[in-house]
Length: 152
Image 1 (cartoon, rainbow, N blue to C red):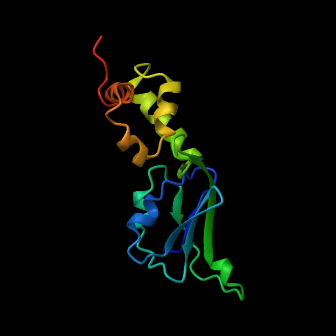
Image 2 (tube, helix red, strand yellow; image 1 turned 120 degrees about the horizontal axis):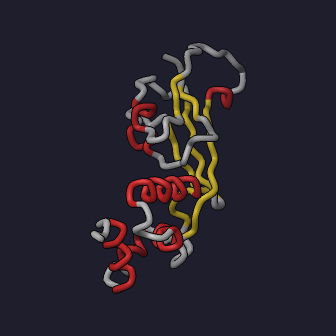
């Protein structure tokens, strides 16, 4: 097995790869409204856990084993994503592609039960603010509609 590489077209920036990496070879940096995921080959043990954890099959171990270079940045796979700001507190909390992926998956599983505008409204709120307003009736109603498909 060779080092892992991101496919920037399919990566949604969820960070599942970094969470399962036992050698901390995958770093996540949030800076200026961007989420940057990097795999440092020098720390990677080529265990393939990142590949297994990726929900969209975006990170793959290459078949190239040794790639000598005097530039240390040749030994890094990097992908950068635009982030979404919370509509309440303004904090960056998720990537645009990740939110779009969640909406797509919810729509596939639930159909027209919840409108896209309602989903976007809910998903454009960070987890901390969602927690703070969970007792607001309109948010609670929306949450229940997302979690429990209405019986017709």
